Image 1 (cartoon, rainbow, N blue to C red):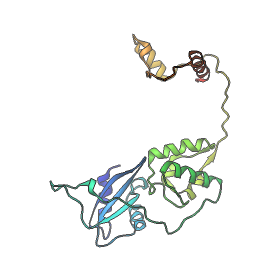
Image 2: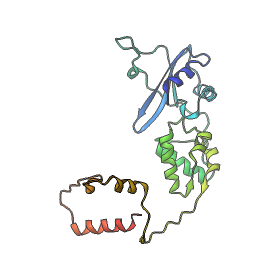
Image 3: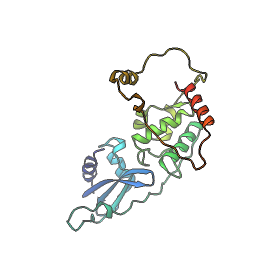
Image 4: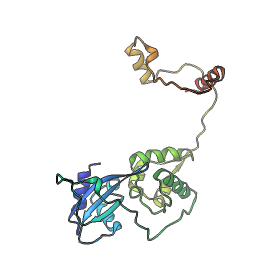
Length: 231
């Protein structure tokens, strides 16, 4: 995301004199926040709505903070660390999940975004969602045999709209031992083509230590089972 582009869009809105946009971290949650100069505090929803006409949803800040002046360092430059911390605005309306798919999305959004309560009309990006977290969402939906096209999340970033776009997939994955010849994958072709002199070092080495040691037979048995299923 080009933060400068977001700042220009925010600063260009009516009643906004200047703006700064930066990434805020709260635990594992990251989101965009916009600090703006104006004669008075502007409604967060109005700012977000105005920005939807100028920017894609994933570039719109999740929080906005009204300031009378931007903090400056001793060198006269913007001191981003001194910007006031944003606070979540209270919602005027809250909509509970109406069906199973909506409830699944609510639970996953709360878990991935670190938000205690999620309304079905909340915007994914306004709550701090991004493209990386969207990939996490699709992976977790897979466990419920539900498929999400990430492009749909960018077009319809609310649970109410998104739940109608989820598709059901019946996964029947064979768990038997894999036998027979298989063609090499592209990375395997590359491996043999490079003809490494120390092929056993073409891997990621990890040393595990345990105070009471390991049972060699049990460890070997575990690895053999993994090899049987590694397809």
